[in-house]
Image 1 (tube, rainbow, N blue to C red):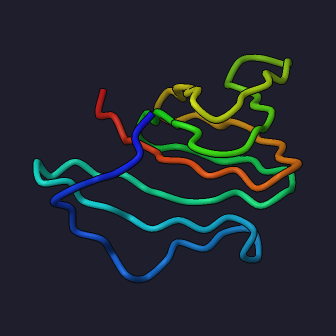
Image 2: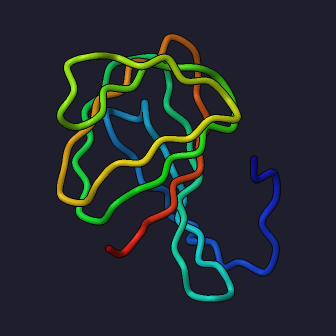
Amino acid sequence: MIEKFEHVTAETKANVYFDGKVISHTLWLADGEKRTLGIFMPGAYEFGTADAEIMDLTDGECEVQLPGSDEWKYMKAGEAFKVPANSKYGLRCYVPVQYICAYVKE
């Protein structure tokens, strides 16, 4: 699990969704790759993706409904899931969940 980024550029304006219940900041790594670092507060959410995403959970636990599935999968800190480009996924959080999202060009 990633605990620290070095040599990054951080955008100071937050990305705020769902009336402030989901907040992230964009980081640009030295090699130009984009990441977001954020938190999901308790709630139920649906997100759409343009690029494929890899979500690393760094704190908390939640349930994830991946594209093409009717089932909810339990996930906790230290685990990750991948979402294909141009799709939607669901999250149900009962405690605050912190994450790092990597965007993958396919």
